[in-house]
Amino acid sequence: MASNPIIKIENLNKTFGSGDGAVTALDNINLSIYPGEIFGIIGLSGAGKSTLVRCMNLLERPTAGKVIFDGLDITSLSYKELRKVRQSIGMIFQGFNLLMQRTALDNVCFPLEIAGIPKKEAKQRARELLKTVGLGDKEKAYPSQLSGGQKQRVAIARALATNPKVLLCDEATSALDPTTTQSILELIKELNHKTGVTVIIITHEMKVIEQICNRVAIIDKSRIEEIGMVQEVFRHPKTQAARKLIFTNGDFNEDFAGKGKYLRLVFDGSQTDRPVIANMVLKCGEPVSIAFAKTKMIGGKMYGHMLLELPENSETVARIKAYLDSENIVYEEEHYNA
Image (cartoon, rainbow, N blue to C red; front, top):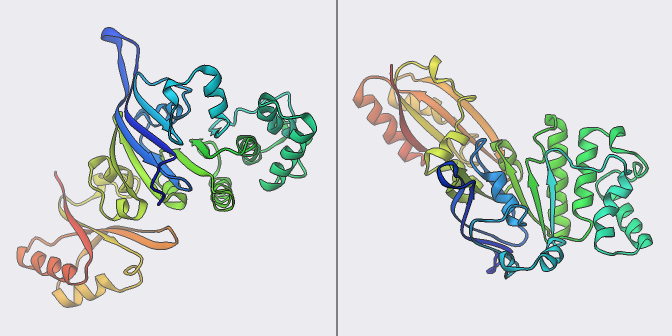
């Protein structure tokens, strides 16, 4: 990882309103993002993630703190200086934000026009970018003639028009169906690999983080609760906010669980193909109930987690834990009360 961050946020706060009606959207945020990363910021609705990403290019002005981009504190810049820096920070949105009266080609040309690029050069650059995102045959199409996925591809091409160092993606796939979401994520990953552009993904969906990101920050109630490699956060979530996002109620409905003690097991890529539970039952001489199990790909490796309902006999539970320890299986005990 490069020693100098491309984006560094120091002691950042954002408050909307004043007096008794003041609302704290961001509370003492500190964050470093490095060149070439695909960095995820995830949180539930209202956590502050979209406000945070808009502070990174000063679409929202922080109430306090610094945003340092490529070594420069952009919170101290004049409007003219900030406009120039923003050419190095592309952004795509959930709603695409295309100009409906412009063709796909002219939408991609728009930021180049603002930057003062000659028209002929701008069109050539725009055509190259439309080909890069797989829409070389759609340059004359208007947004109303494009699908949701095609609109987002045009938006990506537009965001890349000025050769930015950073691409901000604010819920960029939230309005898309699963198949289209997958294709957009693959495109973003490919562009990151080919161009080296740093990508910052804002999302409320853990599966987006798992598919594309190297590192992730968990934001909850306006604060960063946890930062780490995606695999490590999945295997060892340290905070309740992270657990809530990784082990969702959509995976396991507590209302249908038997009341009592459970073990949450987490498997990494070296363990998912081993008959751990079958061997455990044979070794301990006691059957167990599997309340929930799921596997997923993270960073090209298979990971999984499982919820086991524990027997009431404490000696059997001790044998189960000893076996899991001997197999280096990560686990922790959970309780569901009547």
